[in-house]
Length: 309
Image (tube, rainbow, N blue to C red):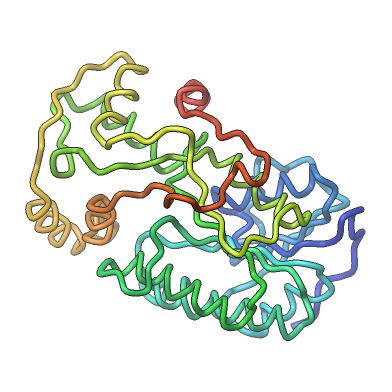
């Protein structure tokens, strides 16, 4: 595979962004361009035009790259100054497993970047990443961080909490369900704690890391407020003018329903998603985060109108 053609490096250098067509990746690309970087989107779907950056031409290019394929990674990172790995997976399908993408591919990108002499790598993980966790998703995130650190010791690992923003897969589907269901089933008693973070704040954090604003090896990014799942539902419901009855449902029942749903071609719920709802996803005490980068976290209330427009 040939390396991409040389382009303007931008005044701050050229960055390869794996997963640059995704929900977070598109925002990372736009923030980098706005900050004077040149960007190469490395994606299995390079022709998926990212709407937030549709106007960029001279400092932006898209190339086909599969993080499971060494040759395409090598081509994608040719002649770049830094790499961002924003590839993520929430539902396993076929060869796209948590182990394949979060662990093996993460280590592969890190190792090849290091071998290419690239001195900056930002790896996107997730709050609660733990190689010893029971949840396959959380365990893969922890194992992925370990693989990245072994291959590229100076990498910066960013662990965002659940992200919100226009076209998200968090607030938007919850609001649609709250509009349709007068009785809304809760995961357990709805007491799981979460600290949602604005996707634009996360993208801004990645950009500042690449500017050299911090050398902290790990950052955990959360919003300004911690909610129980039940309280967050009530907040969204109030915003859309609904007053649903919130019905507690035990987690064993959810796991049974998810096991059945997984037989469907596109399961609406998986056991992995249920397991995630059993764990609090909040920033660990004392961990550096948005404040270290001079970013004031955006409250979810200030963005709900845009999300639900």
